[in-house]
Structure formats: structure tokens, C-alpha cells
Length: 386
Image (cartoon, rainbow, N blue to C red; front, side, top):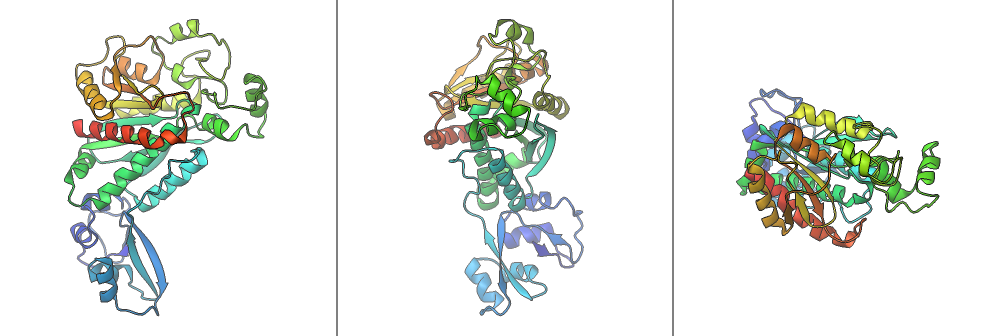
């Protein structure tokens, strides 16, 4: 945070702090393009360390030690009662190698939006238990790409991977002054991310049932009285959220074995009955996404076709995703009613379900590094094709 002086410009702040001015402008939506004297300006990618003003050493000496112009420190220390020194963030905030429940994610989101305020967050709906369904937006481009994770509860590692990517993208945007490609992506693409579609289910898998009734008794009954919820994929009401969309939903209803609430596979009594799927459908209908990606686990496969509705360019994109990840591109599978199925059918635009990692769900955290590398490479490839 700095205090604007008369005649200051965004370009000046960019030069003083070595951060692209587009990011500084977007980090300060409360300010007009005409800066006024005394305005508080947030500089993304920096933390602030505060000392008592009696600390020895001049601003010139401190600026030299921080490799910053003395003007940068002057604008941060107008009152001189306390000495405020900027510290550039150079490491990750997000730690994906941990059980990644809703509380961990929300704290990471708040921290990322504090230090990188060009990341925008908003609530697009609420879960059955009232948890906010959060969308993050990064970028200012006309082309919109949407990414989501944790439709299925025991696939929560996908949320950790997506959040780590948001962190790395912001970190590199504010640090890689010589790498203009990332800034080009930022200017061409607006990236929409819903990192946890199913927060109630994720919390159930990782933390067990809450004390809240009637939900505690209901999930225990659905789970056969078993307190081990590691195989639970559904939302808290026992509805599989990725079998809830109106793309031949009737076929899934007819052939799925569970005819009522279950830990997995029950498509509900009708399409879009659940608050989580209603929110995702509303977001998608309102947003004009060019491409959507749904992260799941497991199998190291990329599903990209649906009933011939996929456009020609979808194959070119999936070939690039397969190339950078080593995953296998699969055009058709015998499955309906998924989020991606519905998107491809309704808009006839590229949509991808990416099955990260391999093994038995829930995948172990020992796979996180490998999963993250593949997901990051694919997301960067998607930004590049736009």
C-alpha cells in the first residue's frame, strides 16, 4: 500500500515496483484512471514489514538493500511514524500437500486476494449446508475459460492443484518481468475458477460428519452406518453432482443402480435439483465461456467429445493438452449428464473432463507434485491457444 502524490501515474508505480501496470490498475478497482493526491494504492505481489521509525539507516540505504528506488519507500512512508518496508513475495502461499478442505481453501483464497488483489472472488451460490461456492477470476481478456474442481467429494486433491495454479500464475505475473507471455495471457484471457464445487462433500470426506442434524444422521444412514467416508463422491444429500445436468440425464437415471441417495452415482430425481449444480448452470449460462475444463481423478485421461456436438477445434486443443501432460485423449465414453457433456451439447464449444493422476480414489498426497505438474502444463497450454 502506498500513498499517491500529485502527478503520479500507473506507469510510475510499475517502474518503481517492477510490476506490470495492468496488474496494478486491476488491483485498484476503487480508483479511477486519474489518480488523486493521497489516494491509497495497492501494489500486488508485495507484503509489508513495519518497524518503529527509530530504526537505524536511511531510506536510501534501505532502498538499496531492497533493490528498489528510494521513491518507492517514500510513497510508503508519508507519515514517518512507522517505517513500512515492502517485501516482494517470491514463494507460494498455497500448500497443496495437505488435506484440503473448505476452510483451508477459503483461507488461501483470502490470502491470495489480499496479496494479489487483481484476483477477484465472488460467491455464485451456496451449498446445501450454506457454504459459499466461490468463483475466482484472473485476467482482463475477452476470451473466457472456465475451470472447476471437486465436483466429486473424494477428488478434493483437484482443488489443491487448481489453487496452486492460481498461486503460481499470480506469483509469476508479478515476478517474471522479462516473461511477457504470461502478461499476454492475462490480457487476452479471463480465467474463471470454481475451485470447490462440492464443499459439503469434501468436508465430509476429510473431516467426517458434522454434528448438525438432520444431515449427520442422514449421511450415516446413506453410508450404512460407516464412519469412513473416504469413498463418498456425492454432495451432502447423496446426489452425484456430475450426474445432474440435462444432457441425456434420463439415461443415467434409468441405468444407475442407486435409485435413491447414495455415496456415489445417484443422479437425483430430476436434473439440476441441487443448489451446487444450479449455481454452476447459472454461472455457465451467464458467462459466455469459450472453453470449460472439469478436473476429476483418476486415470490420466482427457475426455473431449460428446455425441458429435464438439467443434472441430476441440481436437486440436486436446492434442496439445495430451502433448504437455502425457495423458491420453479419449473422444467418447458411455456417459451422460455430466457438466462437460451439457456444456458441449448446449454450446457446441470445446469442453474437457480431465482425470488427474492414477490409482484408487482418493488419490494419496504423494501424487500431488505429479498431478500439479500435469494440471499446470495443461492450463498454461489452454491459455496459450487463446
